[in-house]
Amino acid sequence: MRIHYLRCGTDCPLGGALFDGFSKGLFGLIPCAAQLVETNDGLVLIDTGYGTEDVQHPHPRLSRFFHLLLNIRFRMQDTALSQIKAMGYSARDVRHIVLTHLDFDHAGGIEDFPHARVHVMEAERNAAEKKRRGFIARRRYRPVQWDDVRDWRTYSGSGEPWFGFDSVRSLDGLPPEILMVPLPGHTLGHAGVAVQTGDGWVLNAGDAYFYRRELDADRRRCTPGLRFYQTLMDTDRKRRFENQERLRDLKNDPHANVTIFCSHDERELVAMRRGSTPKQ
Image 1 (cartoon, rainbow, N blue to C red):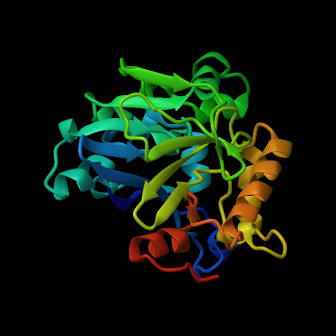
Image 2: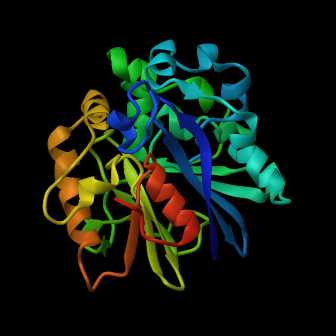
């Protein structure tokens, strides 16, 4: 399988390095990362970032609160659909969408691929559709982004163990090299997505962490802006930190052949595209 690492939108919050750790100007650079996996049975999209309708009609699809807070940069060429077409494929070629969770910046492009089967944890779909209570929940989950989806597949949080985590294998219609790894905390049904390649495993940890140095071996480090945002958004802080600790142990296990990256770290995304180690 071949994996492409996509930037499906960029958030540019006021604060620069207070968010991303390196920007010299007033505004940070926070990508919305996604993956496109080429399989023998078609394309698999892992998360979608912002979609074409988000770019063309950001309101009321998206919350004005998050639009302003994140200073979202909308560009049509950044949508997953535009990038997939640029590779010579069509929307119909995307057979499956696997979601880490249903936040607005991960699920905005779902309906750009109307023929795709959408996979998500059962707890996440329930939270997004039945438990949208409170200021943050009503604004993070935007059902208009996925209300036309008819082919859902949802999964419980139990499964065969995978490097110390519970995992969900046998995703309906997907090859066994792709699995979901429950990582609740950021949302109730948040999950990572692991892909086995010829060189080992790649784990898309979604929003289980936001900054590469949160997985440092000696101690956790995070920029003030991203620490604030994670605290604002988490639904179970204790479980979020527990899962970060397990991810930290996995990253620093010399016997585990697993590469881990998250959805919103610019240097991690650049490194994954280059096949190198991200700069600190």
